[in-house]
Each structure stands twice: as structure tokens, then as C-alpha cells.
Image (cartoon, rainbow, N blue to C red; front, top):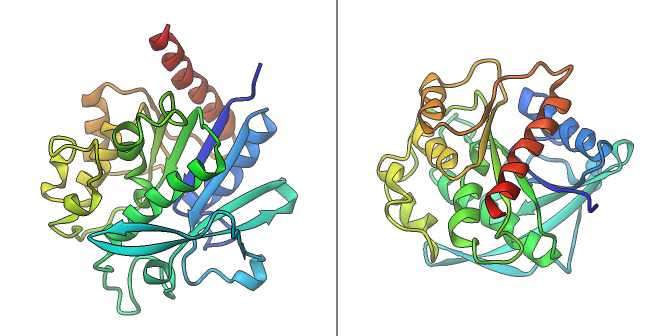
Length: 275
């Protein structure tokens, strides 16, 4: 029997970024899932304050060189990689000079929310999927962590659903306490759109707040995991309204096995649906 393939798309992973609940899960979950017999790949953004020399990042030339068009502008996609030797796993980094060569993650030195955070999320999500295409690696399940990854479910279920690598892929979204008070740009929906995505799919983007961005991610996910002890109450209500499978918050001393079991539940529902 082939190993199940799990793709992790994470907003934060330690030690590359500050210690956080999401970063801890981003670091230890892929290792734990790999140790339980799964095949894994892990992606995160190459934020500008990540020290490339200390973390030994290097560009993967064979994967780099593609341009992604966002809002009628070409943006070169650069792929870098680093290894966490103790975990025997690699981390792929999505990089671009326009979007990620900054000293801060989502806000400038004056704590102002970057105006192009919507485009950065688009670029990151599409960059991950296009890189996985280049790798020719078909994931059975994609697990997304944080709002920066929120467009992956939409793209997989709509824009890339006819690609044989992703036609049977299931998607799980983890929600955390990573709310932002600002809204994305009013024209975010136009920047997100690709062939296969309709206005109905983007109904929440009429007002692209944190809650609405995450509602779209939930709409196109097959299951949801609560990753923080406290998350937005409106999102919890929305998950319950959709009736999608949900795994409640799991303490960090036993979350890996609970997640692994949840993956099996989501993947088995796909198998049953295709019979």
C-alpha cells in the first residue's frame, strides 16, 4: 500500500520565525506525521526577516523561474529550501522580491497593515501549487495553517480541480487566533480570480475582512481543525453551520495523533465518495 501524501502549507514555522502556537505546530506536525508513515512536503513564505545564512536557505534553480501574473503584473517565483536535520525534513520557501523582501511579516515598522497583503496571499498560495505541479507530486491531503494560506482550498477545488495531480486531493484548514482588524482591498476578488473561479465562489470577498477571508477557506475545505485555544467565535459558528467535519482544539502534548486520525477520516470520506 502506498504511503499517503500530506502537503503542509504553513504561515509560520519555527525556528525560521518567532515562537508561536502556529509555528510550533508547523514545525512538529510534519515531522510527527512523517514518523507515522506518511510522505510529506512542507511550504512557507520566505519572509524578509528570516536569516538565510543562519538557516542555510538556498535557491532551487530547477523549480524557480516561473512568473505569476497578479493584477496584470508579472512577479517572478523563486523557490528556496532548507533542511531541519534533526527532523529529517525539508522546508520549501516561496520567495519574491516584490512581496517578501521586507523586515516584517504583515505590518510595517509603524504597525500599518501592508496594503498588498491580499496579493501576497495570492502569490504564496499559487506559488505553492505551481511548485507542487513542477515536482509532479500528487498530495492526497493538503493541510493549511493561517490566513496567508487561505486561498489554497479555493484554488485546489476550483482553478486546479481538472489537474490530475489535484483531482482527488482533500483539503483541511486550521484556524488560529491570527485575526487582523483591517480589510483586504475591495478589488481583492479580481486579483484572486483564475479560470474556474466564479463570482459566487467569491461572495465573501465583497467585504474581505479576516472572517470573510476565512469563511471562503472553510467553504472549500473538506475539514477544519481548531489550532488555537481561542479562535474567532463567528468562525466557529460558521463551521458548525456548514456541517463540515471539525476537530476541536487539541493540547500540544497529544495533537499529532489526533490530527493523523482526522486525516484518515477526511481521506476515507473521499474514497467512499469515489466508489
